[in-house]
Image 1 (cartoon, each protein chain N blue to C red):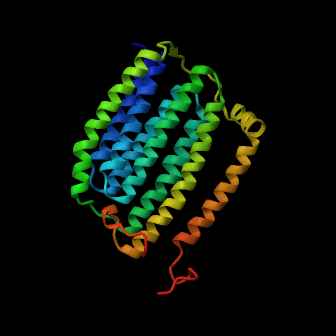
Image 2 (image 1 turned 135 degrees about the horizontal axis):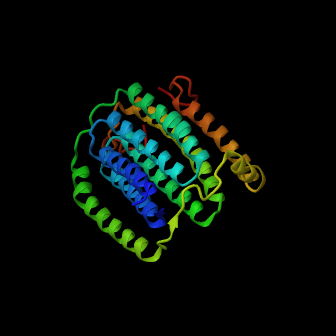
Length: 172
Length: 100
């Protein structure tokens, strides 16, 4: 068993444990913290695949910015424990076995049809310089369109989250 | 040396956990976090395939997915705040009317 495989299994175990913990926890803040754990472990997996830039962005943007937004909203709304309802119990009874069956099917297809050749560590130059070459030459138009998307998202968030008195055309 | 299929299995597991969370959770914030978990699973597939086929474009796509996820999180959490302000609840079972 190579050291690469041991690292993969260690990060993968943290990922799996965090994802299962996200499902079993009742309180949203515990779920958010498990999701941060999953994202941190995934950054380790990206490093194993040689994607340094993606790993750094994963930690900074995902585990940093986006999850801070989530935790902030959980605290702002004072979210408590979720209550079980009839619908959620039905989803639990039907959904989990269904997803298990689907997961076994996907695992069978993947193990049967994907090659068993190994992905060597650091096989791909994932440095910021190479990413930037690709991003600002081949993907320049999507990059610019993305900036427009971000701008619209900012305006939408401000409009949606502003106080109801400030929103025009809504009689109270 | 780790086979590509191991990465794909981990990615499929994370995606499945996201789907299960989306279905069984009743707190709207946790449902939203399940969507983020699904996006993370897809990102792992992108990076694994990028390394497998020596195509750096896969990592650029992960970058785009992250940007879209950030925009989605900002707008979605603003919607959650607006919903909470009008209904005083985060339980999706009690948010069953389109009108305010």
